[in-house]
Image (cartoon, rainbow, N blue to C red; front, side, top):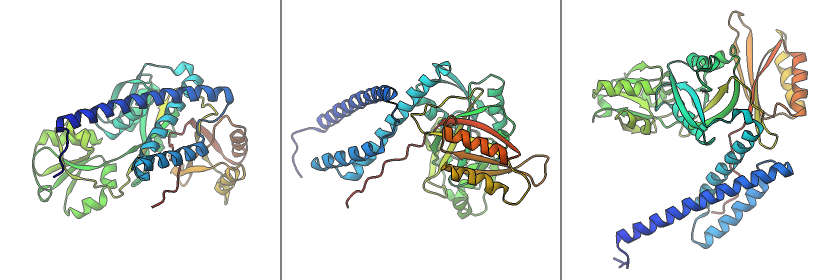
Amino acid sequence: MTDTPYSLDDIRQNVSRIDNEIIKLLAERRKLSLEVAKSKIQTAKPVRDQAREHDLLLRLIEAGEAEQLDAQYVTQIFHTIIEDSVLYQQAYLQKLANPDSLQPVARVSFLGAKGSYSNLASRSYFSKKQTKLVEMSCSTFRDVISMVETGNADYGVLPIENTSSGSINEVYDLLQHTSLSIVGEISQPIEHCLLTAVDTGIDQIDTLYSHPQPHQQCSEYLHSLGNITQEYCSSTAEAMKKVAELKQPNVAAIGNASSGELYGLSPLKTNIANQPENVTRFIVVARKAVDVTSLIPAKTTLIMSTPQKAGSLVECLLVLRNLNINMTKLESRPVIGNPWEEMFYVDVEENLKSPVMQEALEELTRVTRFIKVLGCYPSENVKPTEVEIEE
């Protein structure tokens, strides 16, 4: 065994000292990123400069290798730091563009009680805005929207699509009939676990509580369990609360492990989703639309219905293609009361105020029966700048 001049306590104290220094340096770096945002206002430069990010990562990889740090480790850390910097600058620029929306406290409605995935997404989104929350739990998606429409909440957070189970149709249908605007988005990793209130074994579980979406997202694992009774709840939080109250060895809930701790539950089995990377995209709605500065990437969401004739949808999509507007989502939903008629939801990567988007809306108005903009909002999906890493 190799002797060391330091005791374990000495080593831990040094590790804590270094960790504190890292925290201070991260805070200093974040403050400098704000100064960068201020300078970009003067020069009208966009927040992201991916060519510079690429060069920065290459330089950091080289510096890391000189300190015996592997390239994968360095890039993973700095992708996170760069993402934080971009979102921090975007939030600052958006506050300047929307001075009336400055609020130290925001009332936010979401599905389920504390610990639900919608609650986790709400906290994650507004933490980046440095806004304190008044959390308002709701039992249905309709209630989430109603709370905002009536002025009882400032914002509503709604899941819109999942990488495993696809679109949340109920939310899309509600968007047809609301006057609210989409003002933001966030993608939230979903980490499904099998949670129980008492020590037990998987072979003893015969009843599973959850919201229908997690059931669908974990269908392959649930199928492997055999004859399991699936009890649907209004949210994952309600499911966890139910299992906590029952305290029986034969029941379990699907939910997040950290949220389960709020209800005294422990994970019996982790990572049970069909896809390893299970992510839900949430939208944020408010009574008033926001202006998105041209310095940051924006998305616009609209709904439209087309004439009942061959090629009408294609004609609409050609408008976007010819104007070089990238469409990231196309979803069709039936129009209630009009059999066989569809309403199309479209997400595009373009600022509503840009000349090209205004031209697109003008042409789409000409070739559609109905068109409505649901919102223009900052794109929160910060794609990492790729660099080639030599093995």
